Image 1: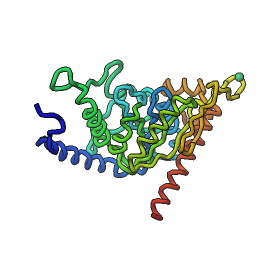
Image 2 (image 1 turned 180 degrees about the vertical axis):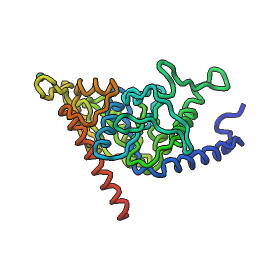
Image 3 (image 1 turned 120 degrees about the vertical axis):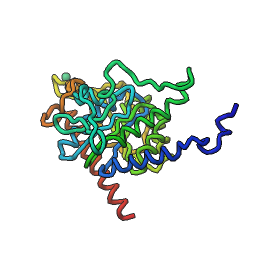
Image 4 (image 1 turned 90 degrees about the vertical axis):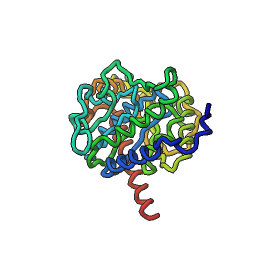
Length: 296
Ligand SMILES: [Zn+2]
């Protein structure tokens, strides 16, 4: 039997040309997208998906055209957060049209394509070997979602990445070198340690890591309006990356998000103000980045 390393090139499968063709249609579909912002954490459970939607709402409120691609194929949250679980993707001349929230945020998520509790399986031609196909199929689906969608003119495409430090390099390759990464953490050593690993992994790419957002930085008490500590001790892990913002956990804001309410035009809490401030910081840093590239 031939081993994997005995195969020369693509083994005559023509897969390189196919990937190249798909990559070209992806570039065409993203041609009018100004900024691709990939939001990841490396680790799950830090509120990254909710943060992605909140940032999208804040950017939308600032007048930007924003869409979200939920890259978490089997743990899609964005369709629920957007209140769009029953919205189908409708094919059009330039690709599928994007379902939008009431405040005009486009959302492409497996949550609208596959009803709960169904899952995608990565079925294989050889029984019992789905593991050998999973990554290939996962990125093929993502490439198809990106390329097959009519994104139109966008200021921001936010990509909600699933957990997994090992996949950062592949997401960077898929989204291209101009995609900018933002990392989300909570104030624990465990979460920050994984973010440190994520920074290291992304260091192998030519993509810019804009900074990190400290989520759940305290607990916002609705009764007294004060922020109380949520973690007993502050993390001792130093991240060599700018902090873009810090947002305390606000149960009311979280409940609104879970119910798929749109966050625009409601002043809400201090947490929402800090999300808005974070979005502004991201915009300023992206403008700075663009002007640096022009003068290069
Ligand atoms: Zn209180």
